[in-house]
Amino acid sequence: MQYLEEKLESKSADYARGLTSLQEELEAVNYYQQRYVTTANSELKEIVGHNRDEEIEHCCMLIEWLRRNMPGWDERLKTYLFTSAPLTEVEAGATGEGGGGSGAEGDLSIRAMR
Ligand SMILES: [Fe+2]
Image (cartoon, rainbow, N blue to C red):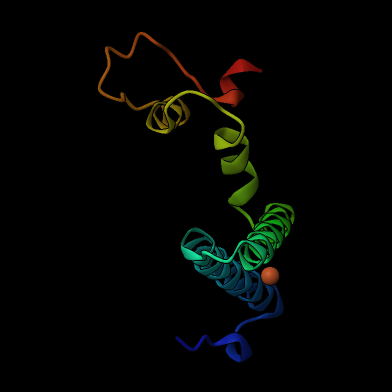
């Protein structure tokens, strides 16, 4: 899919570059992970696993860039990351909508714990 970076104002063009880069890094993680589990040669498996982990690092760097720069990421990452409750319950807590329970459980989001 071709994007329209040249038609976007600079902030949105940077968002598009960051999002596209993240998409590409995630795709690389997926390829490397599949190769990792299907590679019989132990030396090659080690290299492919190393490469997968470096792509994960690249994903994390891009997500952090998005958090620092693109509206919408910071609040949501603070809500969902490093939680242990089921994610649908975290969402229900963050949005104030019932997650199928009685609603008496309250807000499970980090925001609610502050
Ligand atoms: Fe990468």
